[in-house]
Length: 107
Image 1 (cartoon, one colour):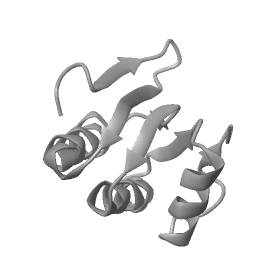
Image 2 (cartoon, helix red, strand yellow):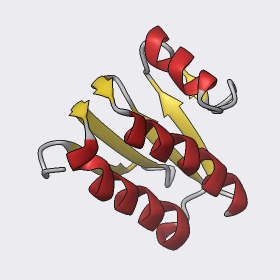
Image 3 (cartoon, one colour):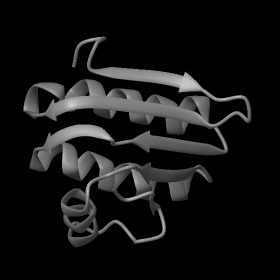
Image 4 (cartoon, one colour):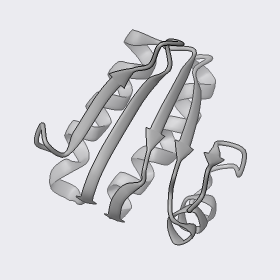
């Protein structure tokens, strides 16, 4: 994943926002996983938002990474939210095991 593919920002209330863009494929998997693990296990914000508004496609490896991020967040008391996903991506995430409550602002 290149620097232009993902932005990481902290909002005024301390929420960490990760904003991936484009097509997330196997070449992006290690960097995305590293970013999420560092955020959840080391930074440990109260809330972590993955803004999926500009994700056009998600391969199975990265899908599993997002599912695992939700589970790891629960283990580390970090509320993980998946915002602005398309309806199709939200359905795929739900089918892969993400509960409905972290999916917000489905477009």
